[in-house]
Length: 383
Image (cartoon, rainbow, N blue to C red):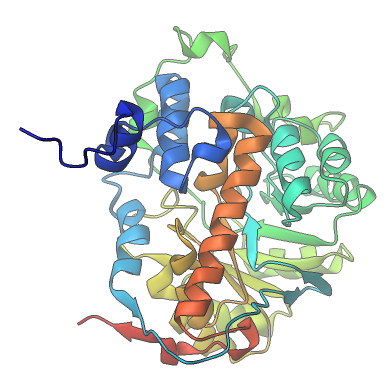
């Protein structure tokens, strides 16, 4: 029997075309999409690290909803529009960014790659994307800023000790950060998959020395942590938001707002922006995707402050759908972490380039040469 494509004599090439699930890119530039990066990264991580990065909470309904929400949104194609030049620039918090795609804060990137956030920052320096650093970063903000070549923005866990929170803010300000993202979506959570791992046993014991503490995090070095210290603060209220805003010159963004009532309150309390987020499906088990929450939040804000979104973005078409529904910018987390785990800085840069290129293709198909022209008219909602 003759082969389906007799001109394909190379078995590897045939596998690339017909057996995508088993394709492992040998170099970063051979990864065609972010899922190619995911397969390589998962083949290199131990089970504990892979589980931590990939997991959601409880039955992972929200984790799945973040992706499934995009499938219910269809992009309308518009023809005979001059899309020879594409402008993806966006003005955000007083800065002009060449792309609306930002690097979301992800804690503990040392588990994805030995150089963690420093290596990710080197990748971002190649593409020029804005990076948001996590409180739970493996490396210090000073090292990350040096690798990135410009100040990064910072994600803050509130902590239950005001003096520690202030110490973190002063260090972040001294490193040149101009925007701080306060995480408000984790008063508590159940990470079932991760709880099955015993950190005192291999392979976890190779990295962890129980009992570990939040004081091990780079941003905490030099700070006096009181007994009972925790990075979460279940007692946090809007009074904390006001107190925090009054204590720093940085722009304040609330990360984790998903309801219109909270969005309206955020505007009333003078915050500078909102990041619609459920922590990548790692916070609540609402079963509701962030792309589904976005329109309600945008409507409540009424254009008074920027609204960003993260959660489930894997393609440029996903980014375009969010932008069309009112997001000023979008943040991606796991995709660049996959790139980091697969090929280090090369993988991070390739993931960001892939998403940018896909966004440009989507904008051309939608007949939208610039982000300024975007609105929800290019979206059809499947009933």
